[in-house]
Image (cartoon, rainbow, N blue to C red):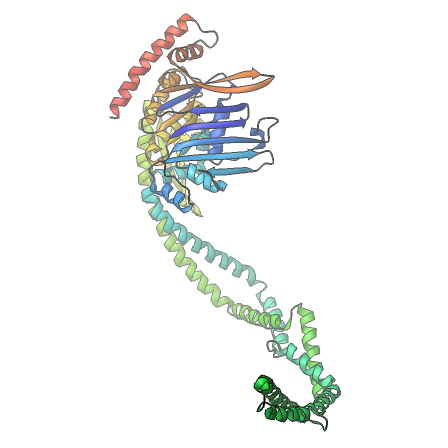
Length: 565
């Protein structure tokens, strides 16, 4: 559950610390006092979109921090462990700092996380129902998610198999579409590719061939210089006054000298090594010199070959090695195009096979969904009966559509609000009060599978009054037996049933508007109820009615708790 909410510089809330309790907590106050601002603050902890408009005028940032009991949820604990978030004290502190630059920083137990991670973690803690959520029921595309969520344990295993097969189905259809689009241009494309392939292939290119050709060309162009250099080296090594003759003399003398003084032993070894290095060099240079041959015809061949390579490189804007790769790519595409009809036939067979498998899984999905839908219909009907819609009829209608990632079911929730009226779409017949009751019924039904610690309603009882508002209040209290429920409400019936009442007030301080929150004691709760009942000034009669309403509510609470023991 949400234990504490700390808000700083958020909208008209300068600084506020709100302590929350278990059970049903009702937040009340005059319109514009800041009730929705508190809900907006909590919504920031659930990872909803932020805005710099939330930052109090003149401040650099706004901060929202929520302290939660750690629920006993294996999946949540696994997520926290993977993120290396310490939760030894069984407390989770979610925090979000919103800066006037438009950025926000999210933290969980002082560890910075990204927004998607905050959303994932908060989904185990908060279920927020805002006023516009009722409108989601009017979007028929959302109705399938209600069925899948309600029957997730039975539906998800089949749906996962279906999704894998659907991806395969999409890929095959995409490939067939590509082949169809190519059909008109395949021959023209094939001729063009063959021309390119032949042009590159006829050169018989070899990897790094150009590097070797350039080396050979440089050698042939500098034949005379190379010949002179080798002759000069040989003369310097082995001529009448060459270094090898002198080195031999030094080597012989050192061999004699070390007999008398071992000090020159190391030098003698180095001179010996140098002598043999020069001997080897003389041999290699002599061999190289003997094979030096100027071939003008070969030079012309090399120059021509390099010219061919350069022309092709320029034409295709690729170097030699890239041209070799391009040739392989061209060959692969040519083979594919030459086998166009064969490929098309093969993919058509695959498409039929996958289509049959997908249809089988879709049918299995439909059968399970219909079974779940029947159960959900009965449960909604039962809840609506308690919420004073006993004459209404709910029907979940199935139709077929093209394959999608969710199957081929087109699901709509239909309603007949009055006896004898035909079933119609929610968007055509449901009033605001009816939508609120249907949404509350769904919250009650789904509460066991939601597994969140705090459920928050923003004026879900708007648009109802009298007996209906009383029944909705009782349902919210019923929900609060298993989960913490926070509710913003203007109705005395809901306020009277609350285990804890928080009053939001708006005051002026130093020419600035400030919203404050405080818990009401019994006398203050009576006054707040009297204000709601009278609508204007509190009177003795309205106070009397408030006390009477509290007495009735206490008896209702006892009955509800008794039924859930």
